[in-house]
Length: 377
Image (tube, rainbow, N blue to C red):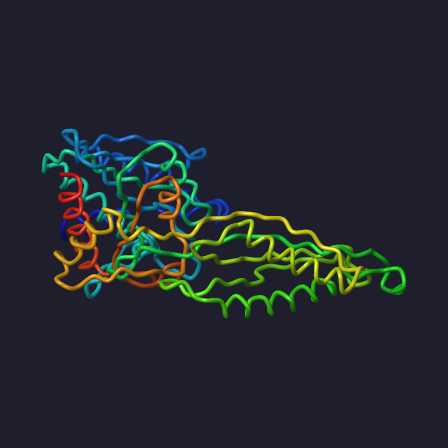
């Protein structure tokens, strides 16, 4: 077992389940302490910064001699929960795969980043190589948002698993609560009550119709069409009462060029049309968490350099593409740091069986190092 694989096993053995996803989970403090020790022993400058209490980021810097470009390598240290897993924190190697929670999403990519930065330090590069091991990606992405507000780089690679494909675009998302209002009354007095849940039914029908309209829009060349769906619904108090309110949580997946204001205005158009048809239909829209999509410019230096490194290491042509899920790369891009994604092969993100292909993790470390040697020289 080489240094990349040993490090990955050590990371998987540490429980870093995000407490915002699973109440009482330990979060990132223990794994952050391990990462800080490892990076310091590898000769990097290390800073530990709390994003929230006991929810730290770890930043390791392979400091250059000066005058070169800075490369940022990013990976998240939190994971989702372990329901259905027998031994989630006992890494197991079988047939070239390492199994365990977080192996694929995304401690494999993070281990490759750390080893690449440690190796880059020995090459006397002019530019810095910064590893940012961040908290909270699985919930709100607060770790990378904090990094983007404090550190600058000329280019970044986010090591999310991409099946050894170079990714330059992904969708964003916006969450909304839609609340319909009724009038509470005893179930035996329908002339006094207005059923907020029934009113929400009209909105759901219109939302489904709007979803089909989104799917019919001209697709983004790498990401396809935007989408929308109903996620959660709650309302009512008891069986014998007319409900005076109903709340529907909606997720809108966005493509580059779309904004939160635009997405909210589209929902408002639906509400306004329903109110015009039925004055008793009254609803309010409240925006929630929102994260922007990613689209890396074709002329970004980090894109060309990473693409050449991938072709050099893998020996195959590299055609940049897109993915439908959101990542921390968008937060770096919003801060003005040109960013791409490249990570290992595997399966089982958020599933009961999770594994990463070890050969691909080693290839990622080679790609990150080759990128650093060319980008930061």
